[in-house]
Length: 138
Image (tube, rainbow, N blue to C red):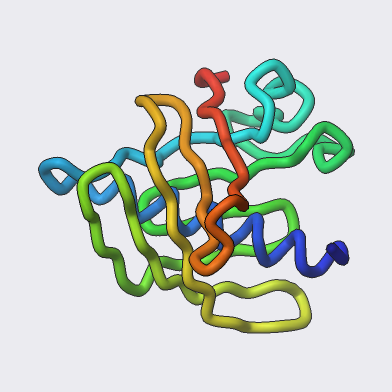
């Protein structure tokens, strides 16, 4: 997958996390920093001046995304959730995403595995998923 494609995916994941944080009863809480490997959180994210961001070479350690309200933030893209549908432990999102060179609409499906683990699902590809783990507040 190209660097641009990874950016859009990261942003899209971030957006799905945002939708999970709208405060609705029974909604999946996606707020926070999410990394593909729980033991790599400190290598993926940094905090400077109280603001959470991405480490210099975060993609080397699997990457991740940040969900802050209705914003999904990847290293190279930002998304804003436009629509959300909760279905038990699953969340389907449509997000408007932007990189330095492109705007796009992205659909995401996320399933909560537990309070601090989610899987991004790819409809039509039943055996494909990417797992993310919520990082502790830094």
